[in-house]
Length: 399
Ligand code: NDP
Image (cartoon, protein in one colour):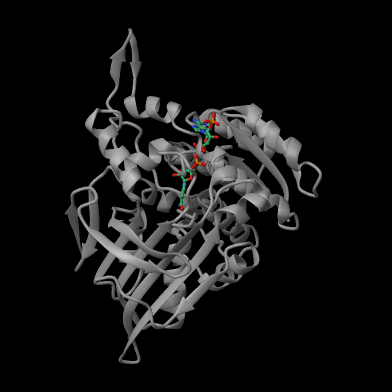
């Protein structure tokens, strides 16, 4: 059916590539293009036996001209951006120049400022519309499936959703004293930033990890979780009718938090360049270099993740409560695609989102967040492609 150019070849990309190859009816041909071509070649070698035709290329995705040349030579139907958030705008620029659809899993973040918001990418709306191409923003799990879950609930069970809590629990254990389960630089920037949530249309800011709750997660048990700022709050507060309050919580163990605090206290999480032996280095980038590569955690991570959305609102004048979630097992993911569950739960939705665009189900000109599309075919595809979901109308609520 179609051709996809996949940019990046890290933990998440590896899952996207495995899943595209499993889905060869839709992904007849893929190109893996990244900064380090040897990683792309290694995956190509491993997956070449299947029906999906695979080629590889070296690309610096910070360079729009290089991207345009690559897109013009491969002529993909969609570009799946699973490099880093720093590359979102250059890749969108190249897609615009070549009139090719675009999908990513994380919103743009300038490299020198730890700040992420949709304004930079929403500014492309009119240009994508005029060019007649689709951009799907934030199509991993959170953001991504969490937006689809909310849209599904809004479509089928609510007239209005007033309270939305997104709960992200990783109860996996990789056996290291400290490691992050996706790109360490992006992960640490996210969790060391101030927290925030939206109440009555306004952002309320908190200190990092200031708000803590304990939640009894289905199939996992009780875990400490902390309120974080997260990008989907921004789009869901606009796109979902009736929202009064929206919050995002993520679980962290005490050892992770103690290590993080210590690294912060000694300046290792700073993104301000320093001079070291005549060389300019960014402490957080150096820290990334000494931490375990998240892509290597797969074989050693055991346990489960549970990510989902709890909603309260009204249908036909009556109060409704609803919880929809996915539970994913790290070792099962490893058996299937040699990745841990965090990469898996991000990579599978990215493949599904690209399939939605290629099959015309999510194809309309402009720049969209996932909750702006029909959730039903995506929800069906989650069950089929490895992320089955469960629902309950009687959930424990978060106070
Ligand atoms: P990794 O660091 O494992 O992989 C990033 C890849 O991008 C690497 O292969 C890297 O190349 C490549 N890359 C980086 N810079 C460039 C560049 N300038 N040009 C070309 N390639 C480049 O990250 P992850 O796989 O963990 O994360 C990928 C994305 O997924 C991130 O944007 C992250 O924020 C997002 N994410 C989203 C989640 C969600 O649920 N929505 C959850 C988790 C992650 P090299 O191999 O040379 O380093």
